[in-house]
Image 1: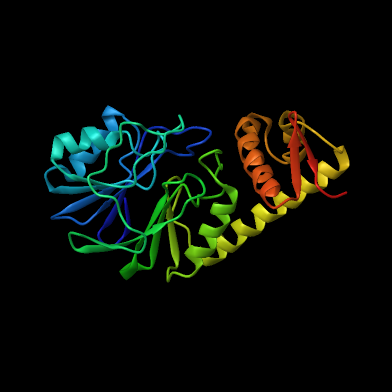
Image 2 (image 1 turned 60 degrees about the horizontal axis):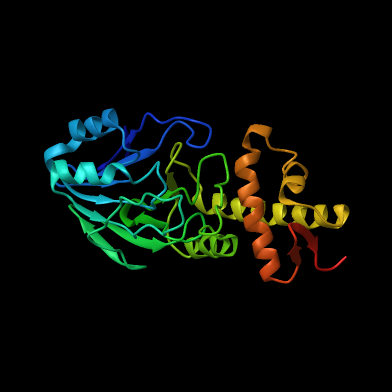
Length: 269
């Protein structure tokens, strides 16, 4: 479907708990096409992309290298000869090790892809190699998993970093955009308000972490998770635990919490 003049979206068939309706793959241009986030290594999705734009594909751009976003890049590049653009995967076990970019975008760089121009914005946090892309002429920001529809993204330490994530949210606010096209879900209006609400949500969760630590006077991650995330479905607690760890690491760096022998405590009563 069309999401803006000259921009189409194809949704991969990988719907699930953490991927929502599936990974969004965006196609920019018609005569010369750039593919943003080709998605998981899935044969039907590959054929859908090729059917939509095959011979015209010149560039493959990846926002980050989690396995629902980048693995199809290598197969798509072999079929089309397209140039692969993105930041290489960190070596931490959760990333797509097959991703091998031919070009690494520089923060703030303008990429000319056919009749579109995208501004690359490095936004570490969800993953260290996250890059958002701004289609300036449409004031449309493509965020990968940095901003999602209806949910806050998981921050996966050690590569994911809560301090970096909050800084990246502030960084995006300085750019001129109105709408957000996320890696999962539909296009969102009032993008600046969404960023502000997301930041407020993360800081409110952080305060809840501190209140819980004070009340429990010391707890493990497993003990803290159901307390801090008592408003989240239990089936999501495995992922919430990761984001909780990211919050605790941030608090420890700020000398507001500490860990010893697996027990987390507030640094001040």
